[in-house]
Length: 471
Image (tube, rainbow, N blue to C red; front, side):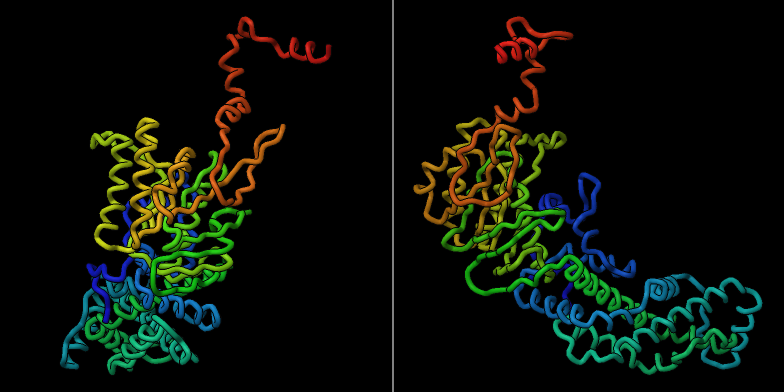
């Protein structure tokens, strides 16, 4: 049964903030969005169909598997899908069905002949637009006939009903009047008779065929993206909520470092620590992006990926205050946590990613709030949480908060030179405190200690330091 536009059953819940955090449709830096990254469509209508899919990923295991089966079939036989009608053909047919042109709907052959002569004689621009539209629509019908005539018997998943609908529409008696050759040499009478069929009797049929073509184009694009980037197809599981991955990376990175993910009912919360720039935020985005792609039914950037589908995906990475609404930064953080808590309270299956929350308040409140959130989320069966923080002092209290908290960290590799990072996930809590070192490496204290045009009193110059060292 086709799904209505307002039906949200089986659809992954994504709010505006999560779409923004994951750069699904736009990037704040002006780089390509995830939609651009996955868009291999050949038609404008196909791109619109792909966007609709990416706005409403599945949360139902059966629907995800159906999309996966379609993508696997397309990926295994890509040559079959080169026969799908091109943007030129579909664009011409779509313009023809939407353009306002005079139409002849006369039943009597004499009335029709008179109307055809009048149109040809008095409205030549309209007539030639009709001719171009008829030719384009005939090419569309012919191309779809050729496509479904191929060996598609082993097609699977969403492709099965999609192909059935295309064949049923093409078999309508009126469409039998469309020949399997170019109609460019047809005279006025026959051309306008065919226009009558296509634009009056079977206009809805042509519109539906275009819609099915665009869905097919979107599915093909998802298969092309999965193949182009070397993504693997995830394993969709049943039962208690969990996500497990090996070799997970973010798809945007040219030379990514792969890491594992393990979230389940024994480890519902991942408490993530480490210095800035070590990889915490990228890790959060990599997991959220992979889970999003998996619930689209696409492949993901990992060596292996297994998951039980979730109903709500939340990220809290790039929060800001809202001056117009009078919402402070901490209020924005609290509202974000409330949105997650509301979904959990409703009994939804939730994955949430919080990147250094409670920065908008004092250290004591931030500590207490973090501990309270970790304690409560670790006890909720329907929720998996990654919580990154610089509050390493929480380590002494995590056993009290609950046994379902797994501690992992990233670290900087320290040496006599500048800091560098290996971006590898480790077990435990980071003890690194690098803020002062980063400030020194950037020369900030030297800038502030110096006087304009010279050096501050009592502060040794570079020359005096070298002299003292040499002596």
